Length: 78
Image (cartoon, rainbow, N blue to C red; front, side, top):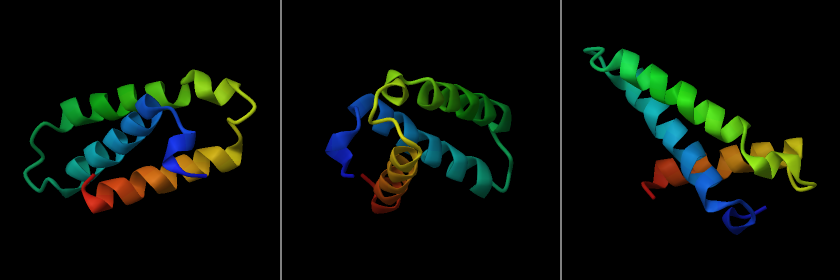
């Protein structure tokens, strides 16, 4: 699966989840911890509850592909 297979908002939210998680994990001072955790929860809700998962394309393999694409984007700085 490629990135065009997924709705842009779903891919954006999954990518934002990784960015927020990385910020939370790498902040030695622990600033904005509560806000980042709330953001992760909201992004998790948006990704898990996206209507795409109710279509025939929303398979477990598609969930893994989405995560791989989003992670690659965050590493590349897209």
